[in-house]
Length: 76
Image 1 (cartoon, rainbow, N blue to C red):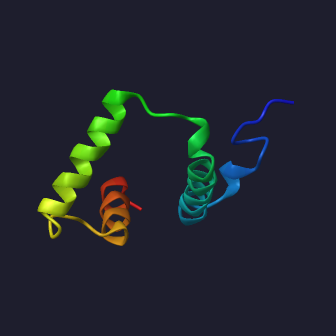
Image 2 (cartoon, rainbow, N blue to C red):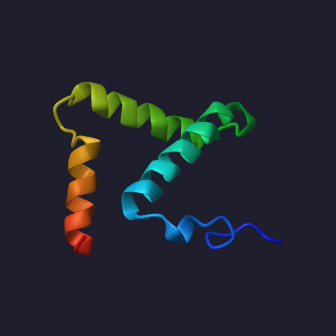
Image 3 (tube, helix red, strand yellow):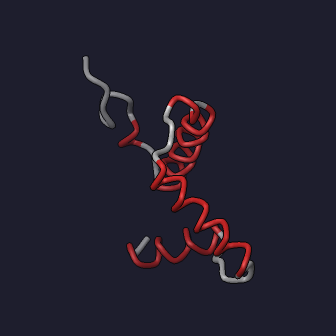
């Protein structure tokens, strides 16, 4: 049996539950990040983004606001 949204029952979860699951899955991927070495270009881009964040620390949108905005766009 192949793994899919349907076989795992993920399609029966509501949006909040699916978002929480995505966050949990992403966290497990981050733990294994050493398995996926970055290219020089990727490292440079991350360094650029960190520098931009440090230069403009107030130029951010909290995750909760992003979720509310996306849900509003999706009509949920």
